Length: 273
Length: 302
Image (cartoon, rainbow over all chains, first blue to last red; front, side):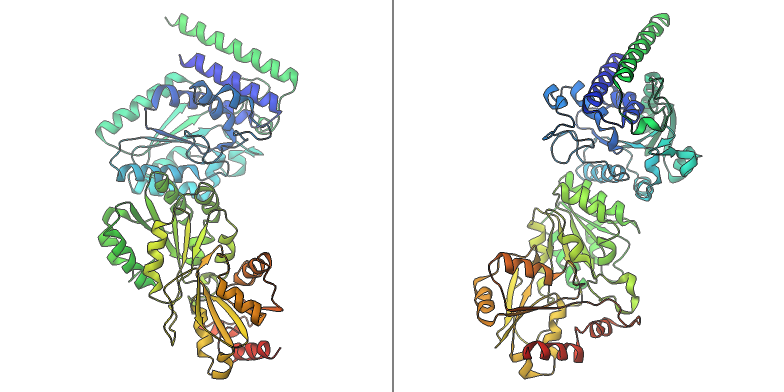
């Protein structure tokens, strides 16, 4: 069940961040549901995932551990001297991580390249790439967008983790992105806008994409509206949660709030029958 | 060398099915044949070098052999981080091709010259550079690159015309013997040594050509010459920083070959603030004509 999965993924990466006394927590909370949904409800064998917003690596590592593709021993080594799991994804170390990311604006292009390679080989694989929204300041993202649309790389799915906050400011104050959906549409993408924390909405987006591909293939961009630091009251929608680690009290509070929210979600499912 | 390069890429296509040719919207009156032969595997990625290089990395990750062509300066410096992260760190066999190394773009101006491409790439992990000298080198180099599992850079320019037969392309090549000085050069600028109009001066110079970076071990014959002559001169159409002279100094010292003197002839940028042909800029840097003659005479006298 996706709700159980995401609770487990979040609990694991919060523990990682706490042990490492590390930041980028808000960035991982922002995309946790997206990652869990892709891995457990959308991607098939042979599909490829690129976390272009490499600063949310803890969420990715936790996801891979959830899928039994990383060991708990590897997870325990996060941030430690000699670890395979640095703050941003490593190169040539983990099969499920095709490219080291962390410098923004690379992921969509390498995804396009892999998709083109798969096309040359006649393979029907899909390529899922999650960028941040602050990342869209990078010109290379738009170079990739032009390319994907022009070459109709229809099996690239570009998901924008739209939390409206970048490293030290709000996106609309730093370099305004809106109207983002119109921009992406103008570039030639079929654009879906969803609540990036709602599995029901993500499911609908998936079904719409699959339906689209079966009748009129087009490159797809999903603007996933999210909240940075989602689910943790003191972090939610703050610039600070990009960088700040947790105190002991904040960690306890975060875990308690996650559990409460999870219980409420389950209750909601029961009420809905 | 552009025409020879296009020919070599066409010939390679006969034997390999994993090639992808990406151009950054350059290659007018040069790549048309390649475009036709490669079909869907020829991609004009537009004026977007960052995407082109990352795209190539993705293709290489999928087992393809991508070549990325542009002007040397655009191929190397615009997408430098993409080369570093997506290609070199991952050790993917992406083949960068830079046309117009040094001042080859001449009157096109400073933005089109590549005087730091070798230095910029030389510091990257896993990257191997190839620098052909004469037209016949190009096909050989293209084949070497196709079989090289590392990321590569090919620096194209206007082929040298030399008044003598030289060995086939190799990391080190002895071009001619000489009496008292060892000159080691990279790329077509070496031809200027043969056009001094000073036969006696030329007789003083034993001339070698470097074809690859990182520099390979000094061959025995060259080591013996350096030990005997003890004076080394390097020549390159590239800034001193990061170029052949620096690489050579390090190699010689760490090989226990300590010459009595080393002199570097290199690109000086735009000392007069004026622009002209490749030959004009070479002359301004003392890499051609009277300036080169004067400098060499001084070095031979020293």
